[in-house]
Length: 298
Image (cartoon, rainbow, N blue to C red; front, side, top):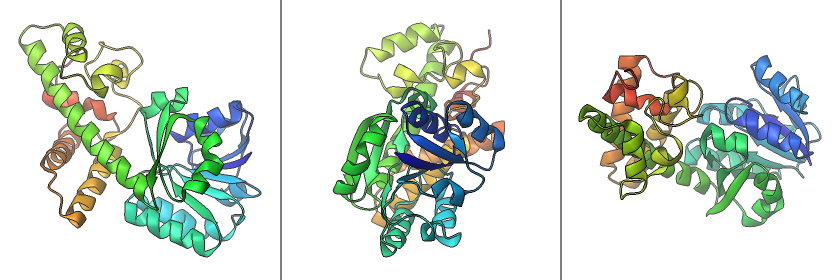
């Protein structure tokens, strides 16, 4: 397929490179030239603008930071006006469900099918093509692009209509933030009581406290290779982005009248971590440093 890919940062970059490696004609655009260059080295073509990236594209994929960027690109800057009506738009950004519905409605007015398809799995999942896609929109449209998603991920779920993928994503990330924070606390307590963090992690992995952070994204430095905690919390999913997702979850909870005490606490802890440790640009597993500032230092 001819794919226009907009936004090739920590997540979008590996996704675009996987599509290029699978033999698709991928034109990439990003505001950071170095990110585009990394994709070109993997077989993609550089596009000087978003409009150039989507020219002649059969599928347009975007991975942008926030709601304002998605609405700004597609609606305010008029990208929807130049996309071929026969093309399918797949927005993989994590944004407000209401924004996803609004932009999809704008696309529909122009005869364009659009899906909201945020992902889970982190940068490792993006690199290894093991992401989970949570898709909102028409099921028949999803089936049309499912082969493309399968080349970027291991799981594709149809969550429901427009915006449903985003709702699933903010629920997932709210739970993830609470799990990561609780995992960091448990590890800090164990180490304070004299346990080895790797041994404690292995015990909890096989016990009732087992969870995704323990299994694949341990927050304690040196316990697990290849994760942000073992490289100074660089890269990965940034604290700033986790706070953004938690804000989206709390906005949705407010709109529906749903109590989310744990989600609210996690948001407040991440805000505190960002302020106290200037941690907005660190991976979200760095919440370990709020719980135990000396984590990993022997």
